[in-house]
Image (cartoon, rainbow, N blue to C red; front, side):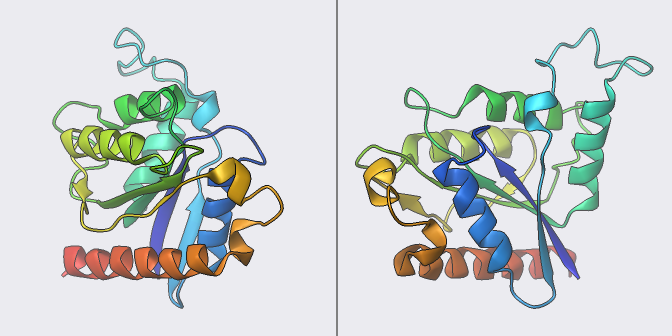
Length: 185
């Protein structure tokens, strides 16, 4: 079984990016399990003073353990003010530690998403790729998916019912799983 941890950069329960992540879970190929990490909003702001043995919050320990236990990471993010949402950046900061021993190290990672703008959140996705790469992930830059006009496009249609989204997600998941297989070899 290949395990993929899904990080959603939006905390809103009915966000389009959350719906895309849920659609990805439903489209998981045979032998692959996608799990959405539900605790990003519970992570405190990164603070090196509490990132020391005996003081690390349980939410952070659980988050790092989830990354350690997974084979790959799928990031689904909106764009906030031209970049990644603060909740996702904070998660990257926690995942990048301890310095030199990040649980992300060598894990295949893909960043995708949707945004209201005409480019579908590519700036946020690019920034996520950059930060996750610096944190140690094996960022698969050739696998992309940016869906523009989210507010209008998904006003009456769930992403799971959008043929283009389903097709693109299927390709994304196939590429991520293939990279995971290569990384494990």
